[in-house]
Length: 256
Ligand code: DGL
Image (cartoon, rainbow, N blue to C red):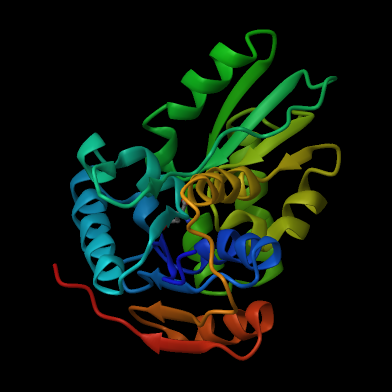
């Protein structure tokens, strides 16, 4: 048994979609969440910036004595160097192990420009499912628009523009490889009604929890959940309360 919290990191509110799955599947686990809303969007920054900010978030979480870190951000997961994962606690990146429908033919990866630039998903999916047509869809400006709570027309236009430009309009299956995107699942489904969307949040959480279970390190009783954001609590706090109820939402500062 280990009652220390699980650290969860993202560039902003997107990581809440992974924290939500953890909360639904393991409600007793404590959470320390840090969303770097001040420096969002990471997906439109240089790799150097992404790496520097990510190490600072990891330090913040370690100072809060977490027993594991879930990187609830694809942009961080696939841009940080191997050294980022070398810790005496597990550091878990976003999974790609989604359940592919048997009749999938044309598969699209929706992600930030910085995630697509790594081609990590392309390498994984083309190797695992060589029979699929595969398209990468970098969604310029979308995570930032979600972060600032843009209206539905703006969000739809951004999704549509990216899907058109990168030939995803005729995809039948897609993965949300940015944790912000499940927050606007309805918008994606309206713009692309024939597409089945897959969310890697659950396999990500399961990967981490399997490790904790194997080390007998699950929480033994209900633990506290605290959510830190580096800026903009007026947008993030209502969303946190809507998902998690009456939990602490506070301003956190990174040491850069
Ligand atoms: N939520 C992040 C992801 O999964 C990135 C959003 C951003 O661009 O900051 O990629």
